[in-house]
Image (tube, rainbow, N blue to C red; front, top):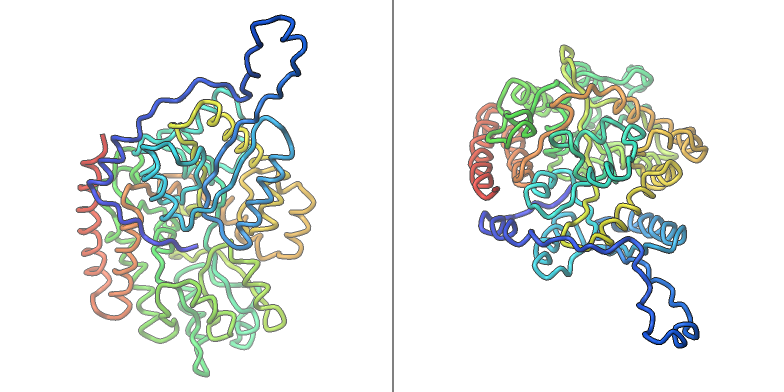
Length: 461
């Protein structure tokens, strides 16, 4: 899902760094029973008081059907044992939830566990507000090899896992098989490269319809970089050291935006603005033959097209000569906050482990469309049945598994990512509407992002 920007001032960031330093408590996961009375007679007569379960408050941003799926996961976990009870609390969008967490830290009224979108990762680490998940992984000797490497990689910095992936998605190309056939294109051989997409879009543009439309979404530009094996930020995509500038205006960026603009200029690609909801509606209405969207949208798109046309899926396109590329994960992960007692933190970890088991992950995939993060989830019958029903999802699985792990596909991290994504979208918009050339638009965005990075980096100690 596309998220609203965080508007975090430098002063607010500094203040946050100062308040996020509360020490952890020393309680155990299962608190001890109340102390025995002084009298031995009274002690023998008094009934044993059952230990109260540890309460873990989980803030999340899943609404609608996704919210119902979250509530089911929590209910199943709570019913599975008696030591920890999780309470899920919806806190609005990712931005709203994160801002509420910042405001709560000095009062400790915030959560034990919070879901944060992937572009909030650098900020969460810099905030000093978290206990890295790696601590619990090491203490429990939890086997990370059972999880998907290309999903874990995004949330690792300095080879340390800071949060546990939760809802994970990639973008893929959706296409109308019926329109492909009518245009003389093979519906079983969709385009996979920039060149093939441009050629197909031309063939599909007729009778007042456009060959496709891609929402002006910064996430897509990040994916186009990864597909070319190109890093989005300097300093190893912000992973070997804090990023000080973006590489947005390099060859990968200019090539991508020029390709995109050329299709808009020759009217084979329609510009419908920034909302993926608008491109999705146009696709389902048969107004366009191709679009880009999240894998999490697959069930809804296939259901929306039922009875109208057949939906095909293909990988994110990249230049024909691109090497060592792939996709970067989107979505969100779960962070354990360090201003809660050790008992609450351990309780949050027990819940996280429950979420990673194959049965839970298979159910989550079937009911939400998000990737299972656990490899053995694919062995579960409900997931096999779902793949039989929605074979289009195999494209997403193959795309993830074929991604070569490197700094480009690991993904960029920076503390001002939400603002940077907005600036990238402005640059794309300026180029597509002819206000600036692709190079000039990307140069301007790069300059502003570098300024924001400099201001942010000064606040991090």
